[in-house]
Amino acid sequence: MQKSKIPDPFEKSRIEMGIGKMDDQNDPVTMLLRHKDVRKTAHNYKTFQSAAQPGRIVIPSEVNIRKTRQIPFELDPPVHGLYRKVLEPWFKRPLEEDYSNKLKAQINSLVDEIITKEKFEVIEAFALVLQSRALTLLLNTSFEEATTWISWGTHVFRSEDTNLDADKANILYDYIDKQIDKAIENPSNDLYSVLLATKVDGVKLTKEQVKGVMVLTFAGGRDTVINAITNAIAYLSEHQESLERFRSEPEIINNAVEEMIRYFSPLTQMGRVVTEDTYVCEHAVKADTRVSLCWASANRDAAVFQNANELIVDRKINPHVGFGFSHHNCLGATHARLIMRILLKVLAEKVESIDLFEYKENVEELGDFKRKVGYDYLNARFNASKK
Image (cartoon, rainbow, N blue to C red):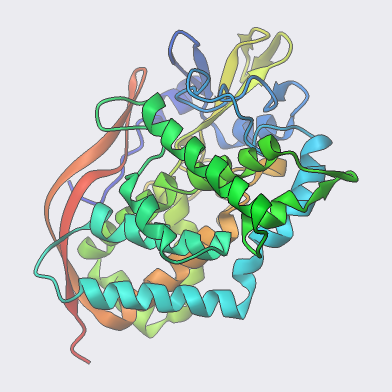
């Protein structure tokens, strides 16, 4: 099997039952596996809520390590919409030419540095660095801050030997608290200061609410973007023809990014808490239990996607849910898309081919399902373009 292939472990259960089951810290989850059921449930916030106990809709649950409500992620309409309205202009800044040019310069510089190496570890030396440096643009903060974020590793709540690491999470919380205090004392044009001056429904955000937005910003787009970057490099190493197509047909890069997000599904699933006894896919679920919107399964649903288990870089019709769906569509999607688009373009311009060496797959244990989401480590080499 190819190193870059990401199998679909949900196919049999998706076809036969439409659901899967898993236990998460003694808080069981009913996993919705079909595209139509995932989208329908994501839209029905009254029966399947996000505004439950902070940390509970995340899988694995973060209730034991997090008290701060992530905003607007852990809110439901109509309150969710009030926050989303004031936050969206900031998170749409990647559409601006100046932002795009700065990100392009960052990625060009990193690729120029890496391309001189005989071998490098993709996650720590490339994907994590790229993601952290790009985040300085999203926060509009000092480029040097990326060094601190890189030191945290690929996930702010998890470490190598445990899914949830309270000590590691506290590093993030303490850091954000200090940055908020700095912004109160010396306001600037960074995201902390902008949030502290923001009003929702006529009322300024509290420090705790600002912290909620910042925790989401740091946690929500970290390992997901890193997975997308790493999987893309693995894929291109084994599909030279795609790299060549990006060189000769740059107009397909946007389609390729959407297809990679569908195929890789960097975030496997996200939970909701059931507010009343109901049914999902003809299966009964009880109030105050959890369901999950399994994006990874929905994105391989053959009822929606032709040749669903193939990565087709110029796929035209692609209603994937890799960035979520409905009102909770990922706030950072514009930033993530831009990272991937520029990365593919720069690789096509500067890299002739990619070699892969030693690697270890990162496999999630989800009850009876085992899903590859990326790699724990991946060693590679960029071979410079001869042009």
